[in-house]
Length: 276
Image 1 (tube, rainbow, N blue to C red):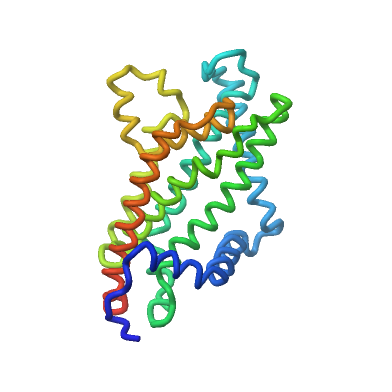
Image 2 (cartoon, rainbow, N blue to C red; image 1 turned 180 degrees about the vertical axis):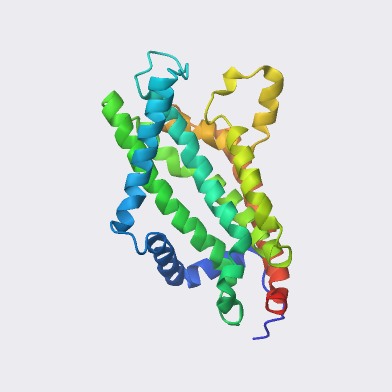
């Protein structure tokens, strides 16, 4: 195989690559998750304790110290604001964790670049798998807190995977673009953190959309995380069905971005070895 030959760029080739290397992806994802806590005393237990501690802090700061209210209708319990806020943070963390790591993901795996047979395109997928693991742990903490506060779960939680799937596609598409561009332009890594932080505050994470004047809501709706956060809250906390039309449109757009990102990665990867 010629390392400088053009790589397949279709979504079908991507699906085949993921299926063919599924065991490698799982193995590398497991190593990524465990590697984050290597050397710590309690190891993987931190993946559970971290969101618990975060939720506890948010509950105190917003519901006790600031006495904030989300005003979603009905009487809010002491920690209701923190639970609603936590959904936004989970969605943002899933996105930002992958995006912030993407510019350096190829640079930190130079040994794989030199191996002609290694499927470099799976590196962002591995990063996504590790982030999904931590998001799932945070989601379990969220649902447990919701049950403690309300005594039940909405049946609409079954739609959570359907809601989050388009965000996964969108994030992977951007991750492939950044992973490739980061090899040639090292400054990319310095900007992603700034952008993802801005996206955190320009999304309805710490405040509802209704708290802003109409003219500013347009700005927040341009943030791709806004729709995902709102839909996640609908199915997880409010017992409402997702906006199927909006979800379909978001999914189609995300699929296109995923393909464009994959296409860009595959077309530019032949120069990785020369640069590194």
